[in-house]
Structure formats: C-alpha cells, structure tokens
Amino acid sequence: MRLRHLALSTALSFAAIGAQAADTYTIDPVNSSAIFRVKHFNVAYFYGTFNAIEGSLTWDQAAPASSKIDITIQAASVDSRNEKRDAHLANPDFFDAKQFPVLKFVGSSFKALASERYEVAGEFTMHGVTKPLTITVTKTGEGKDPKGAQRIGFETTFMVKRSDYGMDKMLENIGDDVTVIFSTEGIRK
Image (tube, rainbow, N blue to C red; front, side, top):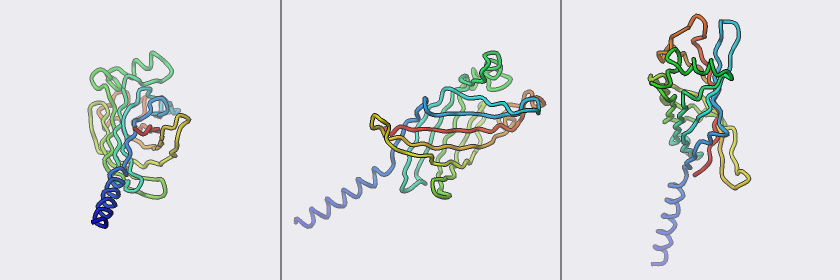
C-alpha cells in the first residue's frame, strides 16, 4: 500500500511539474519598445515609436512550440517627436487611429532555430487588415528584478509593406517598406 501511495504521489508531482512548465508573463509597457523606420522623400530614414504597448506571453522554455504571444499597440500612441506629424500619422492618410485603434500581433507557433532564437508564426493586424506574419525573435535575457519579480525579454526586427495593409497614401513621398523593431519585457504573473 505504501509503495502504491508513493508511486501515485510521484506521478502527481511529475504531472504538476509538467503542468507548470509554461509561465505566463504580462508585457511591461514601460520597458518594452515598438520602433518603426520608413524612408522619407526617398532621401533618409525616419524613426518613430509607439508609446502604448500591452499584451501577454506564455513561455515554455522546455517546449517552445507551445508558447504564445499576444501584443497590442494603440495606433494613436504614434510618436514622431512632432505633434503636427503625429496628428497626421494618426489620421485617415496613415493609421486612421479612430477607425482602426490597434496594431496587433498574435503569435501562436514558436519553433526553435538556434540557441535563444525562434521563428514565430502568427497574424499581424494593422489598419484593419490581418495577414499571416512569421518573424524571427531572439530571447535577450531573463532574471529577477530588485523586487524579486521574474522577467523575460525578446526582440525582433521585421519588415512589412504598408500598402499590403491598405495604408497606400503618399507612397511617392513616404516609403512602402516599414521596418519594425520590437523589444518586449515581460513580468511573470
């Protein structure tokens, strides 16, 4: 009887460990960055940011394929360091933030490529258009902050054509290819 109890206890312990293998993180909006780069007048690259980022990450280091990420960016939080230009970027010529308030990436398929590098397939929504998008992400680190909270970081750089998402105004002056640099830091729940 004691041996059966020990075997059952051990099996339940292993099941609990397996069930807890994936950790859930809340995206830290203060320490995450969404940067974009686009060519202006076919002369120089312009860089801007988005300031309102939120989301969650379910990360399973032992089985990355079961990991998931859900990131939402408020379109109206576009920041070009110029109020007039920010208002233009938020209007219907570009992001049309009133009609399409969010940019969103939902990654539902992680595939290990190399040490700390992963291919993430999912869907990206911008300007009300959702398309499949596969990106390569690098795990940039993990550890505890001074308050003891577990944190994890990932970064990616990818390119989209804004015209593919119906954002086709002023293509002769503002480039079609937009490079996105996204660095995210999550806090374990």
